[in-house]
Amino acid sequence: MNFPLYFSRKIAFSKDNKNNLSRVIIFIGRLSVALGIIVSLITVSTGFGSKKAIKERLADFSGHITVKSTRSNSSYNTSVLDKQGLNIQKIKALPDVESVQKYAMVTGIMRNEHNFAGIIFKGIGKDFDSVRFKKFLIAGRTPNVTEVGYNHGVTISQKIANDLHLKVKDSIVTIFSKADQKPIYRKFEVVGIYRTDIKMIDEQFVIGGINHVRKIQDMKPDDIGGLDIFFKNVNDIDSDFPEIEKLIGYKNYAEKATEKFPQITDWISIFDTNIALIIIIMLIVVIINIIMVLLILIIERTNSIGLLKTLGASNSQIRATFINYTLIIMVPGLLYGNIIGLGLLLLQKFFGIIKLNPENYYVSTVPVDLNPIAIISISVGILIISALALIVPSYLISKISPVKAIKYN
Image (cartoon, rainbow, N blue to C red; front, side, top):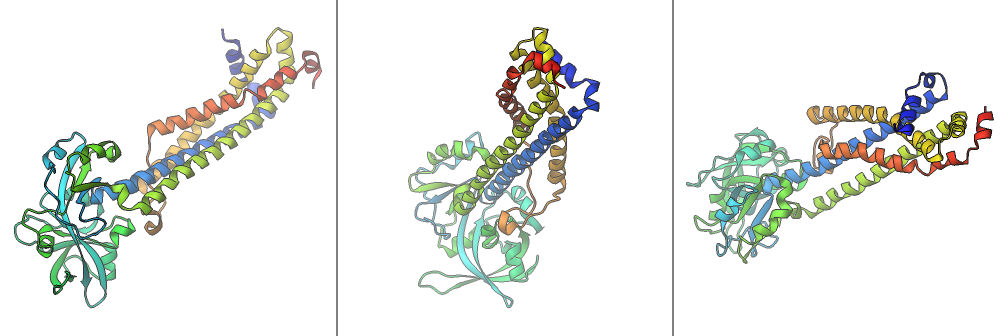
């Protein structure tokens, strides 16, 4: 029989705890553990959720990886993608690739009697994944592009629609300029309105037919300005990036979604620091409270410690007994903390109760990522670290004299 475990369970479940100081001490210990679990769960789930949501929004709008011509550099006016060494079929055949779609871009100005807006016109082809884009739509649809002739429908952002007082089915004139040539005017019909909550996207991008860009940029009918590559899992970007680079030719280059907007990437990286800092603070608070609980329980049960020593129990056995006792006290706190924490997170996940300003946070509601591994790791980690932290203060037991302890009242 494991004496320390047996005796610690007898103490923990003893009815005597209900009528003495132990009741208050146990409540404080469990409360601190529960609060630590709740705060840690919320911090990790919302922190990782925010990183994932922003990353997915960036990727789902413009591709997890984008392929462009080296002649495009950082310009939004895309140059023709070089076909030498470019193997689109092999890219599509990669196991992690879900779809590949072509595009071409050109800058312009939308203008009406109300206002004007500088835009980036992203021309899409017939392979455009309208189902993936649907999550961004708040009204209407995306253009039905067949690449036969010119499709005059465009999908604009809610920001541009508000600035120009536009709604679905309204018409808008767009001006495209070319060096040493007269401006080119195009009249479009608004067929849809989208919102990504990413300010740099919503302020600029308009979705339309690729043939308009080909005409404006003097491209051939089968020329493209770039490729948007989508993976089955956004986390595959880094691992598959080298393989993509091998299949695009040396005159083209690949760019990750997270590299297109470095200011957002830098902002996202702050989450890791904040999450680590909050977890450390909560862990320190829990450990301090649990150590206080252990010390008070040792002082309260000095007579019992003296009696155990008199009966032949070693210091290590008694230390193990009180450490087990303290950990048993923690278990209900872990349980209630997980129930309350997960309950709050589920409410936020399904009902989006807490809102955010997308101009500052790039999402309109607090996103939640319920990762089972992270949830289990928090509880197990707190339990293990607390057990290790209790070892040093438990040595106070070895200082207690059996004779004095029995007389202690």
